[in-house]
Image (tube, rainbow, N blue to C red):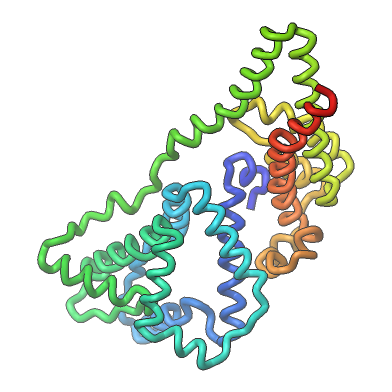
Length: 328
């Protein structure tokens, strides 16, 4: 993992979601004695032993994750990440009877309905699209007598899709669901709103009350943002030199529609305290421990990304109005 690349390409959410999911899967494997997907691996091994041709029919996981991410709103991204991380933190163990209950079709359907209600775009990509992808791949796989080993949650959708494919009701072309969609322009437009609003407020103050008063208001805002951002960096146990980075880049990054202070804070932390090999090796275990978010240097850099971003937001929308009443 290239940490710099993760920050610069805006993949912090994606990497955290992936890590949290890996942590949850590992925990499930330890509790049940069988890792998620083990039945598919076992089928592939048996096919190799018996010299039976086999095909891997699922969509590339990176495409699935990126499609789910791109098609989700900011709120749904936050919901997804919060759900995965809370699952990683959850220490509750499944009882054998609870696991058996999860295998029942009505329980699975209830879970699918719940996912569709809470995260419709995620359910569409993770379940519906993959049902279609798997069904088409199975139908197009070489051979006449085929055995498909699939996850139980996909069985109803795959069977239904196979029937539609045979009746020509659904196209076998997977081009539209095999590509990562382009980023929405809405996010780019939204990134300009805050800098333009702050600039407009300062210009209005200059035009109404004079240049000095406008400059004074700008200084109060910059100090509020810098103070709150730096405070959150300190509370997150950032490197002392990173405090200076946050104080300077907090106000500067708000005026930029391209980068946020979290990018600078995360990058600075990862360079001032370079991750070790053990941090990479244990990240899927460490993500489920609050204490390890401060000890694992990768997670700590990610933590700084979020906390300093929150500090910058609070500095602008909470502390700044308070400071205006006091010093305005």
